[in-house]
Amino acid sequence: MAAMNCLSLRAALPWMATALFLTACGGGRDATGECRGTYLGEAVVWPIDGVASRLMDEAYDSNWVNLTYLPRGQAGLTGFGVDILLDKDRRIDEGSGSRTVLLINKETEFAPEVNLLVHGWYGTLRKSSGSGRGYHEASGLPRGGSVTFDVVDDKRAAGHFIYRYENGDELTCTFDAPTPAEAEGIFDGAGDGDDDDD
Image (cartoon, rainbow, N blue to C red; front, top):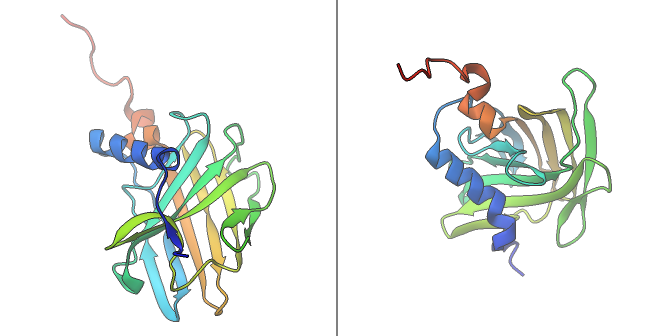
């Protein structure tokens, strides 16, 4: 069975809303981070897609962290990432201590351990032949890993995740992803200017 599956409409909603938001609104703070390690036996350093990676916490009843990294064609990929479903009410204040969640290989999917923070983990890929949720057939599902959040608040989500593969490859992917409102900069400039009509 192919490791890369098509997006269902429901699963695509956070990604589609992000794309629409970014088409309509430009500027603001970009996401930062990178994937670094070994993938398919090759040393890699893949930067995060600063435009496409955002924490979404207002448009939906849940929090989504949508991360995409840019492999620059390595392993035939143009994009590599994850959609993370967080508990909508959970917050981690900066400096209060990190929270790590184990990621478990369940043969046909990669999923978080049962916990109060991460409710869903969905690998994403972009290849010349298409894009969607799933994992590269060349690497298969990671055999295990973890995700660590240092901050989850109304402005950003920051931390890193680790993938460990059967062949010994390992990737560590860092992220600091602002909310759409923070990316647009409304926290820094809202209300500036003169709204008077006279």
